[in-house]
Image (tube, rainbow, N blue to C red):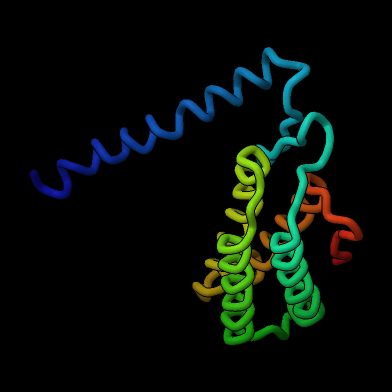
Amino acid sequence: MSRSSILPYFVWGVLLLTAPTSFAWSAVDQHEHNGPTRTESGLTLNNGKPWQTDAPLRKGMEGIQRDIKESLPRIHAGTFTAKQYVALAKKMHNHINYIFKNCKLPKEADAQLHLVLAEVVQGQEAMEAHNGQSSGAAMIVHALDLYGRHFDHAGWKPLAH
């Protein structure tokens, strides 16, 4: 079978794998009013409360926030270079790897965390790609805001930007 004849099957496979999630959220939005509180990102709260965290998660997220915060003045000023974005992306990569390696959350909280970290990874990849680097940083700032609204992290303050 040639590569071009396999592509339609691959696309349908991806659609079938992701469709149940979309339909399930659609059903929750329309019919369940006492269930999870869904946000624009797909994140939910834990029965109206933030999800628990552990020390490795807090350490990793604090590192992500610190490194982004230190870079924001130069990013906003337009003086952050492509090389600096790549270096910042590497720091994000290291923090994310630390979280994945060390964080041990219950299944439900972990699933919610993955939604936040997926946005951090997208931002990191944009900064590495030399295309849309400032929008990559903005994605990470947004992910940090989502994290702060959905996870119980004592002392967490959103970034002022």
